[in-house]
Length: 207
Image (cartoon, rainbow, N blue to C red; front, side, top):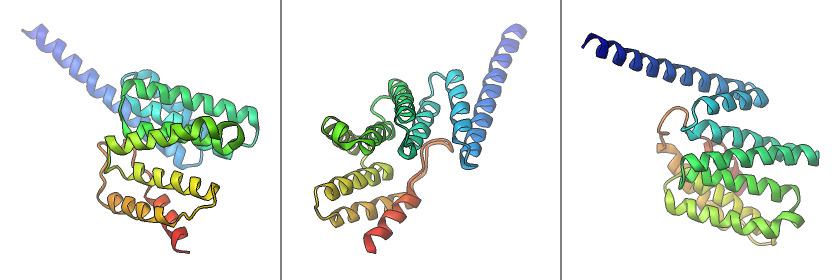
């Protein structure tokens, strides 16, 4: 009996320590990201992903950081490398947590970064995929404010590209802000971004 209790105690202690290491690691990665050190943050998220192969969150954030960097990268080779890594990690996140609306939004963002870099090359092949991803995400999680906001921004961009009025989509941005008001992530590390961006987009709608 004592041996069973000892083994159980050791297992529980290992689990608690593991959770503590995960919490500390994720907190540090977000701290680095918030301190304008995205490369260091992505590297730490990668290490956490290696240690937490069944947890989609660190994979998601590696993909997100690389995608954000790609939007600002002018060098074509570096841009491609960033998005190839972003795709690798969003694929891994999706394998862990399929039918996840936030992961679908992240996949749409990877495609959008390719389109933004070269619309003539990637617009025809990826625009339909982006629209389909947002449609699926909207069905899976219709109350997710990031889904509504991201879809609205995509629709606005498409309308602008074709010379159409973007104002009809402002109501969707307003709807996302309403949802952000009461939104609570499942854990402190689950995606919660978007409110400030929604406020910025809505301000542009009114200007």
